[in-house]
Length: 171
Image (cartoon, rainbow, N blue to C red):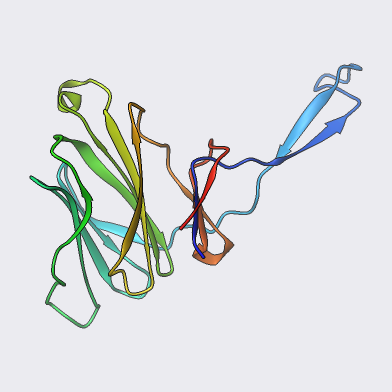
């Protein structure tokens, strides 16, 4: 099971001394260990991003008139897979697609809005995750929110979570 969290909560530890040694209560926050991305962006502009995974596979993410589409190819193959619609919308895309991967888990965030290329906030923001053969994407759209911050990939790629959310989603 793959989980996407809209934010990650940590455990807190109470101490009797504040940062200056005073008797005020002080809370220390501990975060779960994060798996460092092992992918690299090989192509990137406002409408298209190509990500290369650690095993050499590539994922192409592109804004189209239909929304956001993805393709992938193996390291030994010059032929891209058929396009797969990750998210369908009639709303115009914002600038760029944020994507990263750890092993065979790919995470992306993208925004859509009528005037976001003119500087306004997106009206739709999606997070999407694909694993394994990358042929199927699971999305989590939100309305009227700003783009999610960069994601943290945990548990060997089994869980993806932006750092400030308190809600986990099963994928």
